[in-house]
Length: 239
Image 1 (cartoon, rainbow, N blue to C red):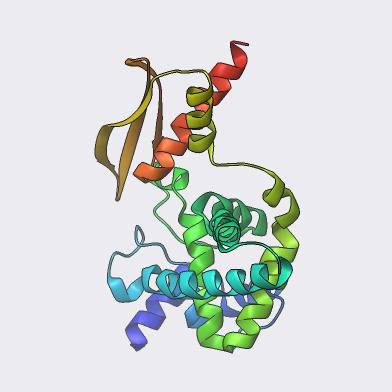
Image 2 (cartoon, rainbow, N blue to C red; image 1 turned 90 degrees about the vertical axis):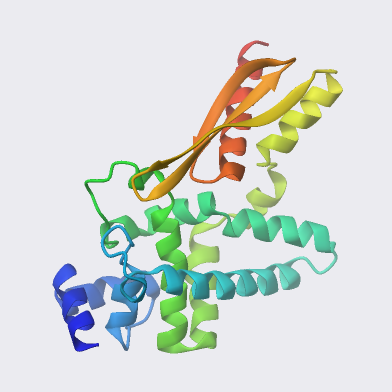
């Protein structure tokens, strides 16, 4: 274990400097710094399970989802289960988390293989944010984790009201357009290949049996959304 901690220290800023940056980001001083160092270590830098942030990402994902669910449950006392589920999905989805992580400045702290050009296009910083939530839980307990998520994540970086009034499910928007305009529309997986350490998916949209546009991302679902957004932009540009 000592060897693991020593290797972690060698990858990061001096303890005092990293601790100060984390204190500014988290709103409190970390007690056990190695939790946070592990949360900031992407598998492209170290693919050994015990020495990257994937397990902490799993833990943080669970607590983040639960805290956001409680927050929405109290904020919208008259809304249905379906509404609350959709809102939680929008808040904790990879695109939102990655955007927040970059605004927080996590990309300056995460250790990853900078030679792999495909990695930065993935959601490693959003994943690191989830891992950070896991580190906070292990280091500080549930109450402090809840405070961090609500104050330093939701209140500071997520406009819940705007998100509630904006339909960002591009696939549903496109399907509704096709139905309204009596157009034949389908989504098809074009390619599924590896790019560096990650799988890359390309989804094509066929309009009236002809390829209309494509979208590429690190999950099939997200690739479909990317393609749908492009299709909506093309349709809007033609009117």
